[in-house]
Length: 305
Image (cartoon, rainbow, N blue to C red; front, top):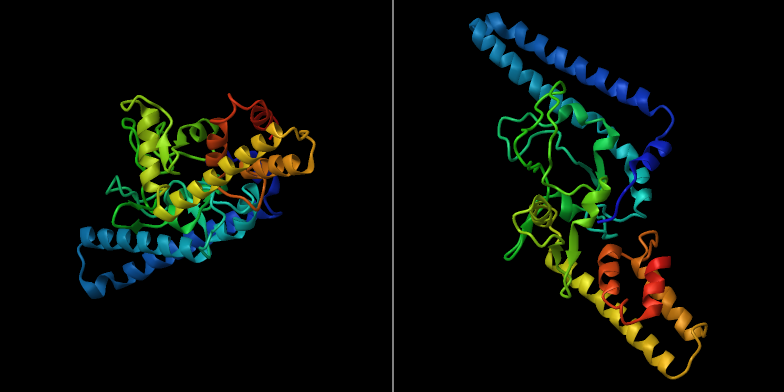
C-alpha cells in the first residue's frame, strides 16, 4: 500500500466540481420530497394511523435517497483523476488490473455498515471526494474462495469506543480498523513474506497496529491466491537481477557497464510506484531491502529510487 496525497487530488478537481456536488444534493432532496409527498397522498386511501404514516414516510425517504444518490453517481467522474494518483494501480493492493467499470470505493460505505446493523451508511459523504479510493474489483467486492475470503464491500470496522458516526452531525473521533492509503502512517503497517503474502508489520499481536493490518489483509483480500503468486514472481525476478548483477561485478565488469545499468534500471522500475508498467511496488521494495546490508549497490538503489 502506497501513500496517496489527497492534496494532489484536490488540485486536479475539474472546474465546476463544487457546483456539480450542490446540484446532485439538490436532486437528491427533490427526490426525497417527492417520495414523501407520494406516501402522504396515499395516507387516507390506505387508512394509516399517524404512526403508520410516519413509518411509511421514513422508509420511502430512505429508499428514495439511496436511489437518487446511485442515480447521480458523480464519483465516477473522478475515476481518471483518482487513477492518475496511482498510475492506474489499485490504492489497496497495487495491482494494475483494475477490471471494474467503476472502481471508485467509498472508504466509509455510503449505504450501510456491516459491523453496525442500524447504521444508515455514510450517505452524507456520497459526493465527498475525500472519501473516494481507487480500487480493484477484488479489494472492493465480496469474494469467497476455499482458503481465503475478502472484499471490503460495506465493511467499516472500528476500534470502539468511540462508536460510528451515524449522521452528519455526529462528531465521534472514529478509529477505523481498515488501513487507509490516504493516511501515510497506515501504509507502513503491512509487510510481505517470501511467499508473497501480506503480513502485519507490527510484531505485538495485541497492538492496534497489528489488528488493523490483520483485518485489512482479510477485507481487502490482499492474500488472494493469484495476487500472492504474482508478488512471488516479482520477488523471483528481484533475486535473479541481484544474483546476475553480483556475478557480473565478480567478473570485473564496471558498474557503468551496459548489463549492470540495465539490471539496476529494472530493479528501480520494480520498486518505483510511479512506474506504470510494474505493480506490487511496495512489496518489491520490502523484498529488495533484504539484500541491502550485503550489497552496497542495492542500498544505493533504495536510497535513490
